Length: 163
Figure 1 (spheres, rainbow, N blue to C red):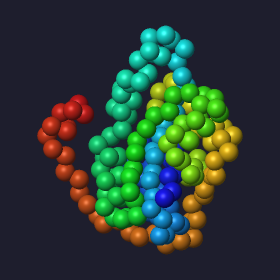
Figure 2 (cartoon, rainbow, N blue to C red; figure 1 turned 180 degrees about the horizontal axis):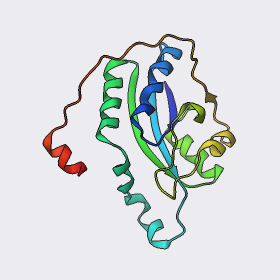
Figure 3 (cartoon, rainbow, N blue to C red; figure 1 turned 60 degrees about the vertical axis):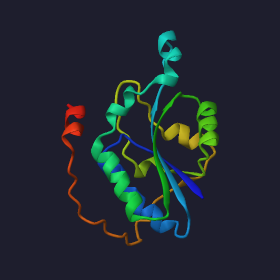
Figure 4 (spheres, rainbow, N blue to C red; figure 1 turned 90 degrees about the vertical axis):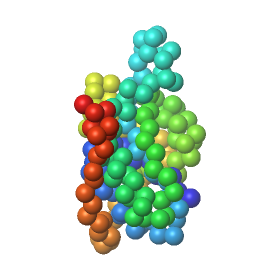
């Protein structure tokens, strides 16, 4: 079982790396963690409420969730796709996160869409480089299975929730 960390800004194109990764790791069961990194606030109120934070999930569109679900249905070797947020800016904190999440490899940031979501967003490249966790690259020469064309229909409740 491989757990691959993918830095993201939750752009719908962020999931486009999955077919190549599945092709590169055939016969492997795969877990993917899409993550965005934020610097840790120094305000006491923010620190006390950190475990209850969920406002960042507003940055994750329904289309992103739908694309993840489509990938899970298309590639049976995918066992889980998680969406998480990391709060911190030290290598030690990041290593602890990687260990607790069971991350075995990190996709190189060059293959990821990592724009800032807000002023607290941080560039993941330095933490990834210093983490000591193996960094993998996408082999561009491998043919990738074409995903089926699928129109996503949103329910009225979902549209109201996004408004």
